[in-house]
Image (cartoon, rainbow, N blue to C red):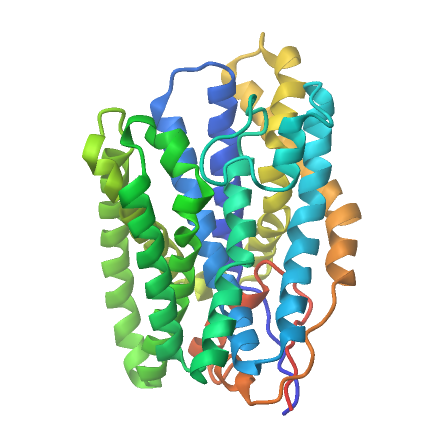
Length: 395
């Protein structure tokens, strides 16, 4: 089978870029000691969107590795993820560590190895607070793809239904750990931001991919025109409901409702991403699509460097009106992260190893068969380098 050219989805890039700035902007208020609970809530929800989106766009690659069955492609998957995520992270970590005089301390090395929040908050000084979510991401890469790869080998099954069973079992297992050992008294630090209790959050994105694949397989071209608007309206309602429930769950007096947070936050994020996917054609325009893709490209560096930029810019901006401060800060983030992406991230992305040609017709589930089916397959490239073609060749 020949290669298939798969392009990015601008609407998903928009979600990724918007989520990055919806973390960066609220943090400007929080780090300026501004008492604005809404800003913190927006930041919390945006991180949850990141989690679901990661699982969603990585799902085709994880399925490819499990179906292919060769260890070499699983290792390539991990190397590609590490090159994409770890190298920029180490640069950002070193920069902020120098800025706050923490370079080569115990806290620095716990950040560097993604263990500062493994089963609790272990750092003496949490000077790089966004790193907790990156630890969740990294440990997901070395647990769930390996788990589904081993299960596929052990049970000799690689179909979507089997993948669904594995991801549901994974979510249930982590949920049980969180329910039994989670401490509601220190919920934010000891539950919400602990890797062991939150690694399932990315699994919901993988689950969303399987659900949409299943639905699209059942849609005919004629029915899609009627199904999509109805489904979009339902997703809008679910998004609003998920937002309200999430705000309730993360309230200071949330108490027992905080056990619901992972579920309602996942439902909210899944609804947003599914809605974005369904409306992809709206953003598939030359200028609008290009802007969305640009936001997606710089989103990771915005997430990594925004705290450092706040610390650098804040002393010079404090005397200005808040709106002016925000404009300068956002512009500074966009300029710095554009440069960092172009000169650091982009060359690394281009140097990553390619997947080895597969031994089974796995690409049949990834290659575009129609506009509706092709768009979901394109999600694999959202976190890959730019609009250029990405292909997984199979025999």
